[in-house]
Structures are given as structure tokens and as C-alpha cells.
Length: 248
Image (cartoon, rainbow, N blue to C red; front, side, top):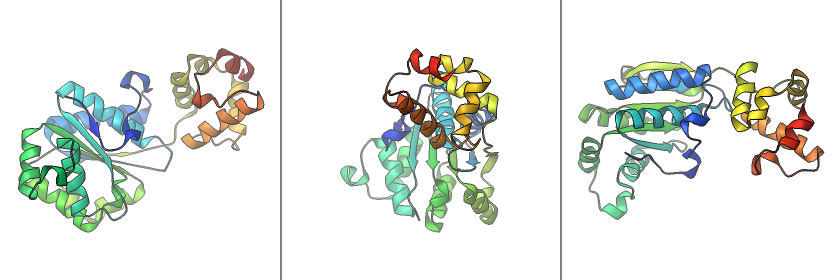
């Protein structure tokens, strides 16, 4: 089966290009469990900790292993039942509900039953009450595996919504990357980063007062060093050995 997403941002690196940090390894185990048992899991944590990349990576791996379609989309603020229905149909059928002329819930339920799938709800803390209720309603009609990803508000939502919580078998709180994980993950971007000297790593950390654990900070730090060297932003081009040599 192929993976379908409603936004290009979810077309991420191939799984073999994602370093298996503790966060990634946990999500892979949880997602595999969800597909096998047709249950739900949630992943929550701070912004910039890599939740989306890790979750989609885990979902794609589980989809390949079990032969199911991965349908991933991001929830807008106060995502209601109509939004959830439209996104799920779009992902499963490859076309919006209006183009299919779908009448409503029964059509979506038939799609879910006919297409083995795994849903990934990103920014799930934005789901409104009707969106949460509608997702629970669908699960009662046709159980399906799902991974809900968001910030700490998602965990609060789970605690308050007992029916939602009853379907969640696995929870993962994302932690900031440890230094060795950060170095290894940078090494995925370019092998030379894996050999970065402690001095070079400290230089990167110093760009943001020893806080490089937010991925936007990582990108800014590497780009700023490239500018200092008079080179194009390294995240927009292939990483060169010349950049790495200067860093180390």
C-alpha cells in the first residue's frame, strides 16, 4: 500500500534516514502495536522535539510491515467533525468528499472498512469537542488504528475525555534529544557530522546558548555558520566536506 497525506510536509526522509533515538524507537514500537491490535496511541511533548518526523517515520514503517495505507493530516484549530470527515475521506480516497459526492458517515465507514489503514492525527490538541466525539463514534462503528500527535494539551485532553482515554493503549512523552542522539541525528544529515569534534559541537551549541535541542535552532545554527564561511545555507544544498572541515 502507498502512503497518502494531505500536505507535502509529511513526505519525510525514508525510514532508514531517520536515526533511532529513544523517541523514535518508542514510537515505532507503539505504532506497530496499534496496527496489530487496532488501537490508539498518543505522542505528546514540546514544540521542536521532532514529534511529527518520528511519528510519520514510525507510521510509514508500520504501514510497510503490515501492508496498510498510512493517512496523515494536520488538525486545524478547533477541528470539528466536518473537518475530520473531510480529511479522512481525502486521505483514503485521494479526493475530497465533494468530488466523490459522498452522502456522509456511512460512506466514510465503508471506506475505512474496505481500505486497511493507519491514521496519523498531527497537532491533535487542536481537535474540538465535536471532532473528538466524531472520531470516537467512527471507532465504535469500525475500529481502526490511529496515532495522535501534539503538545502537552493533548495529554490534558486525554485525561479529561474518559471515552477517548479508554481507546488509548500507549502513550509517549517526547523528551529533548540527548547530546549523543543529537550528534547522531546530525550525522544522518551528513556522515561527517558523526565525526564532529567536541569543540565543533560546542560551537554549534554556543550559537543558541547551549540549547540546540529545538530543531529550528539546529537549522539556524548550521545555516549561520555557513554564512560566516561565505557559503549558501547548507540546508538548501548538499552538505559539503568543506563546511564540515571548517566546523571541526
